[in-house]
Structures are given as structure tokens and as C-alpha cells.
Length: 490
Image (cartoon, rainbow, N blue to C red; front, side, top):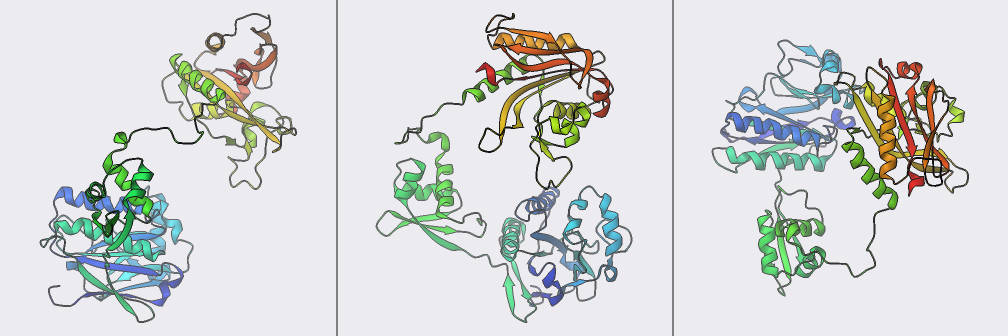
């Protein structure tokens, strides 16, 4: 600290109801290059998306200290009383104006909900009234850092005190390497509303004890305590064997906040040893299992459907009532659909009773792709069944859709023949064979629908979709579909 004074951040009581916690630190005489600067910004974004939970728990602000004058004040004010020039803008705006501007910003709009409905917004000032930031939304332009910045003031505000301290520790430990005096951090004093103060960052080291035999047992290896200590040291966990020769003392640095339990230490030992180097053995319990026949059949069919030139789509198991009823020309009461109690969105009202709507919506979202579009999905549908203990039953369906300038019924019919060939179901009405018979369905064009019978029972339908169905799914070209229940083929 050049003048011998420690930088101070004062927290006022107004912040208590919105973002009550703040910590701070200073990095002096840092030497940025273009790559180091980009890495510094990227680190903040990574932390925001992960441990900071998209800024809901913690928001990071980094500032050019040479443009500011301490002490700093972290307070909360009415949006109309906050006015400053935000980062990369050319004029001043009030907080209310900024919230409206950033509603169309692809990056910042995701964070507005954190404070936009609050009566007070958090804000940080320096001693001259210059705004450093309005967390967790935007920093001020006055103190923005550049490649030429030498001294950085770092503040972390949030609703989780522990996470704020961890984030501050991570930033200063990773970038103090680029200071003129490497790995040197200048502490900052934070004064709390009750008058008490504390200096940050804490950079606390702690020690844990783990028995070597526990690590060997959990990982499934036979290493000496000395070798295990070396493995852990390679993972930035300085370790040594103590006591009876079976105890390992591990020093946890502030950079490893992810080490919470002994299991985390065991995991690091396994990573350092190498998962591929662990000898595979059978456990001493009856745990040998096989894949469910239905799942195995599903996997085999998925590969062959792809080989037939169709692209797999995975759609939501929940959908709107309109998707499985109105758009397909049937009444919702006739679908035997399982309804969601108090659905949060109209898109997730019921469990799907057919895979067709999901594929049609996928095509609608990809209309600009080159034709033809050939999609398939093999997943479960859900139907009400009073004979089961839960009142519903899952059925594994295969659905395929062909979308082009012509209906392509022959493509879908050929796909059905290929599927039956793979399932060892020969054509014909004989027992064990399959046949298609003319049928009708509200989702299909009259006279261009067939019901599929296999092994003596109806397993599905295929045909050309009705123009009304195509229009309701916002499509403009003919479409043929096939949907069968693959359960009877086991």
C-alpha cells in the first residue's frame, strides 16, 4: 500500500434486505498482456456462471484503483436516485433507465430479475461520489480496467457470505501471479453495519486427516501411505505421513474450496492415480446385471434408424393439451392423458400420449434446413391405466416423420418394412407376421392412413398427415409419419 493506508469498504445498513454481504481486496502492480487480460475477464464470467449461480449468490466487480479514491461505500438507494455512466456507454443513465435498456441486452438481461422488483438497488461509491458498480448488473465506466491497468480494486457482493469469500480467494490467488511481487495480495478492510470490521481476503489454510487404508479401500488400490501422499501433493494438496504411519495430514489451500469432506480427498487420490490404472474387479456382492430387454431393443433400433438415413430427436415428455388433442383433431378426454397438477407453463400441461407432436415441433423449428427432413424418436409415452398402482403406464413408442415437397408415403412404408425385417417379423397375416390395413384417423388425410397389425394385434399407424395438422404445427409442406409400440416385439 503506497501511502501506508489500507483500502476500506464501508457497508451501510440499507443493503441488509437486498445483498447484505461484501468483501474486497487489492492487486498492486499487476502486469497485463492481452492474453492475461482476456483470461482475467473470462475467469470472472466462469465464476459468475458457476459458484456465483449466475450472479444470484455473488457478483464480482473489478476496478482500476488509480481512477478512484477510497474509502468506498456499499449502500442501497432508490433506482431513481442512482445515476452514472455504465460500462461502455457514452452518457449517464438512472438505474431505472438502465434496467429498461438492458432488457434487450443478450448478456445482461438474464440478471435483471435479481433486483428489478426491489425498492432499493445496491450501489458502490468512492469518497468522491463516483459509482464503481451497481451489482449484480453492471460496473461503472469511470473505473473500467484495461490492459494498461496497474492496480485493481476487487469487490464481491452477494447474498452468500461464504461464497463471496471463496470467489475473492480464487480471483486473488490466481492473478496475484502476475503482480510485480508475485503472489502478494493487499488486504482491504470491510466495515460492517454494526461497526465491526474485518480484513479480506482471508486466504485461510486448513488441515485434514485421512487414513491411507481408507483411501486404498475406497479407490480399490494398494498403495503405501508415502505414495498416496505424493499423489495428493500432485493435486495441490500438500500431504505428509504422520503418527502411526497410516495417517496422512493434508493441507487444504484457499484455492481448493471444493474440498469439503474426506471423500473429496479420496477422489483426488483416484484422479492422480489414474482411473484407467485401477484394476477392475467384481464386488463381493450379487450385483451382476443385464440391460433391460426393452432398452436393449431400443438401442439396436436407434442405430438402425440412423443407418436408414433418419436423424434422432429427443423431445420433452411433457407437452400442452393442444399438442396432443386440438392440433391432432381429437378431444383431450379421448387421449387418456395424465395431467400435471398446477402446471407452471402451458407447454407442460400433460404427459405426451404420442411422439408425433414433438417431432412436428422439431421440424417447425428447423424449417430452414435442407429438405427432406427425416426425423425419428424412440421414447416413452404415458397413458392412464387404472389397473396399475400409480394409475398410469408407460409404453415405448417408435415414431418417424418424413417432411418434403411430396408426402413420401413410400419412404415411411419402406421404413416400416425395414423395421419389421430387423424385428424378424415377416409380412403376411399368418401368426407372427405383420400387415397394414386401410384405416382412418383425425390426424391423417382421408384414404391415406393405414393401421399396422403385427403378431395378431394392432401396434400403430402410418400415413400422410392431414393438411390441418400440418398447418397447426406451422408447417407448409406435406408430411408422412409412422408410430408403433415396440413393446409387443420383445
